[in-house]
Length: 179
Image (cartoon, rainbow, N blue to C red; front, side, top):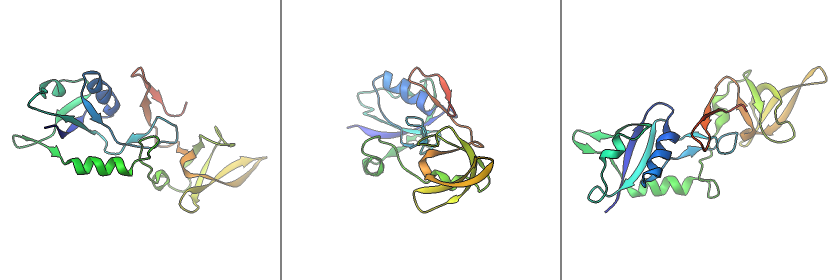
């Protein structure tokens, strides 16, 4: 019977570990937070992912030596087994189309922080984060005709310029999230 095991990855190597484990035929679940740039989210659990395998028919040894993997989480001499109900609940809470989790990314952005708008009519413009405006929108100050003008935009279209993140392309190369 297959169980879910907790895998600890090397720093910022979750996607690399996932790709290498999947390439070896393992069933892997890597929950991610939806990012401002489609397909470039961040880990819901940084440095962790889940792997489903039956230790009676699949070797766990190759998992430990997979590029990107730091180790298989253990408590004493027992591997950490994650209940199926936890994985099912994580999947249930994820976006059915993308599989990504939607969290308030703007909660991390302090007022006065520089931001870039990455979607919509203001895409590629940089401004200053002013504040949240409801659950799904934020106010950003943009320089328009020499004046700072408050503009209300969807929260998911704003990317902090003080928190630089990168994501992996399909070829496994790092790509800066600012494009």
